[in-house]
Image (cartoon, rainbow, N blue to C red; front, side):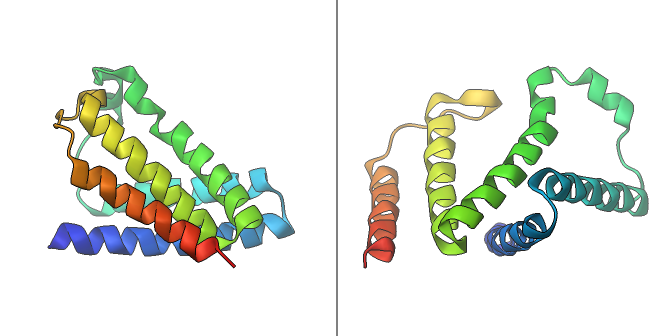
Length: 144
């Protein structure tokens, strides 16, 4: 149950963050905004790490088996940029609907193929039907 609650909070925060970042971008620039977002995220993460007992060491990063997994920060910067642009062009609701579809499709493909160290799962029609239902929902939402 706790996982569902955290996921819902995450989605809500992402939606609000996209609107906030788009507003900041309109008054500065996309790269100033994205830099500020990443910098403040660094400060919050370092503060959380320091206040929770400093479990783990930054030196452990050099021991990561699959070095490509260290690209999370690069992806975070790209996510910030693409969310800002999509919210600016499409609006918050439409942008988030397309973002969610892309997340679901890519996540399901990752599971189906067992990519990046995830457990491979068998194809299930009901999961694909769920994604199709969401796509139909977007078409309905966008339809005037």
